[in-house]
Length: 267
Image (cartoon, rainbow, N blue to C red; front, side):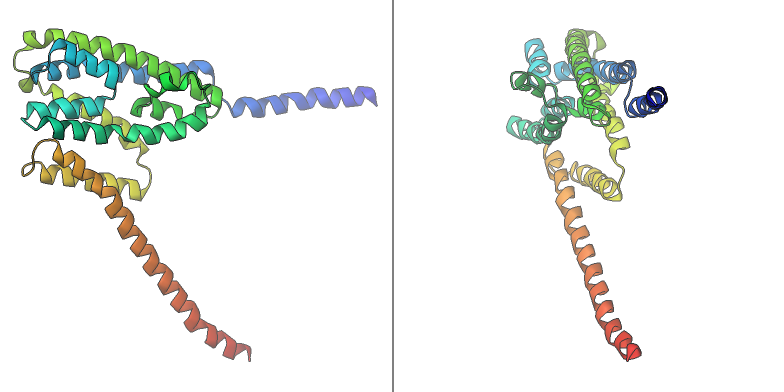
């Protein structure tokens, strides 16, 4: 009996182990994915450095934005609005509201990563679109921490290094507007965002936001269309709420009408 029990345990262990492996992801695969995102996006810091220097910011101001703000879309929005002659306060407001999304990322990532309190202020600097995109799909907490750390570290180092190189090389490029480098940051952001728009609600909201921004761009000061495009979210949610309410009301009415008929048949 003991030998049979030992044999059953031995044969059962691989099945249990295979289930565990199937539910995890190799560390090497997580690192590879994180490096891919970090390197690809980090190199676009060169475009920000060139654009920032071309908009009139000094080398110190440009590098300080990447070191301290470190959220590409907000940085591009700020220097883009300034380059277009927008009010500095409007430009800063647009950049701020774009950066607010990172606070919502942080709410989700704080639960997923469960980092020690001492590390949370440091990790908050790396809560951006790219780290969130790599971290959220990971199947385990270990994989999520590896993805977050590798993506954040790679992107932070490369982004700041290429920002410096871009700002230094802005004079050699001449007219930065002719190169269209100011579109590099938003293009990378949209490329990362597009695969995350899985539901109809998300796609409709994104489409409406784009239409609002493009439609208001010719008539409003630089930076304001970006702020107002955020109105797409409450508009879509309001319309969907009304549609669901109408469907629920129709379903209730149909049930009431059908009720007496069924009752009469039963009689």
